[in-house]
Length: 360
Image (cartoon, rainbow, N blue to C red; front, side):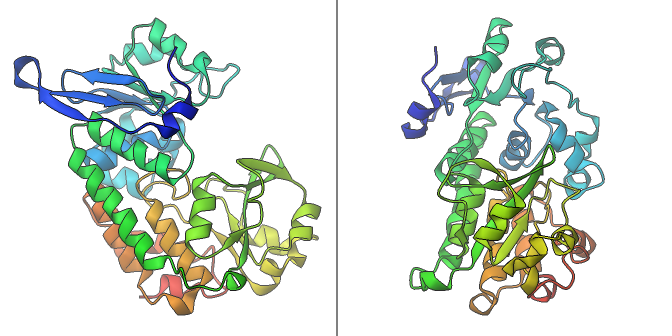
């Protein structure tokens, strides 16, 4: 039985490259559940079941050539978007590789095995029920775990190791450190931090995101205060509870197409929040991939939030940051038109200070 994700959260990522059979670079590393992963050479046929794993593999390799299967979410983001334009191969990859079961990540082992992967990436915190079928089928599996910022960095290092590009982890994590160094303000008055809720809609219910998540980290480093931070993970709430919290800023999950700023402004209750009254309800952009889940593009969310929360303290050009960040992560720059679309100028039109986001 592999060590628990809790053990993995405290483990260090171990990497060793040594000559393997035929002179190939052997990969020795540890996944995020603490399992030793040994490959005779960098993985060449990867099935990435967790959605953020596929764009993280692409960021590590600056190519989609190693992917042979991925989560349906990645396919949906890629279609007609920047990720699909940069990596047209994604339009042809199988993305229906999960089966109905007790977990949303129950693997369809037959479909996965038919792709002849040399490595499968799977969620490590969801229990053996989603991992054992892969092992029983003889499929080499590496486990990822999602959580705080340090866990995200370990995921990035793992993908870089598995693709044979450990130097890419240094570049991607170095960018994260550089952005944090620019936007973090230890001298900032905590009393001036706007109160924030990150809002989603799931099965007809409103959901906010609590502590220990990439979104909570993003809000904090950008100088906001997450009103749901007293609890962890995703929390189902009522409109009445949101009214009691009365957030100064409401952020809307980029994945929820049917949840837009106008929905909050027109809601009989939520329109009475401080956020709605001040015009501080914002839809989160989608870059090449979504910015909220743990992946290599997260610094763009930090920059976007910092400029929204404290526009007078940050004079950087968000368009230039997007251009630079996408190029660093994927090796190609977005066009001006793509930057216009991904920053959601139309969706967020009229919100407070959004002109500072979309203007050069």
